[in-house]
Amino acid sequence: MSDDLTTEGCEGPDCEKALESLYLFLDAEIDSASCAEIQAHIDDCSECLTEYDLERLVKSLVSRSCSEVAPEPLRDKVLFSIRTVQVQISEYRQS
Ligand SMILES: [Zn+2]
Figure (cartoon, rainbow, N blue to C red):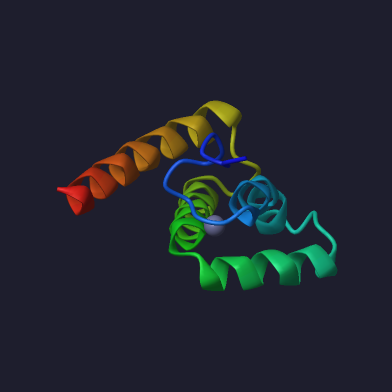
């Protein structure tokens, strides 16, 4: 059985799981064992590393522009524009 239907452009069976946990990882809402597991995967996987860096960037931007917890609409807006850039980058790399 092929795993083609899982995360596009992301190699390895751990990517989907790693990305799901990424948000918890960044919010430090995950136990340290999973933390190490995800960190190890990120070190190994450029796709997930990119995602991780983007998420971290979003968090720093959001926390800079708002001293308290960012309102969801703002976070969504920032996430959306960064994802758009990410798509453009990957299209650029493929061409
Ligand atoms: Zn990955």
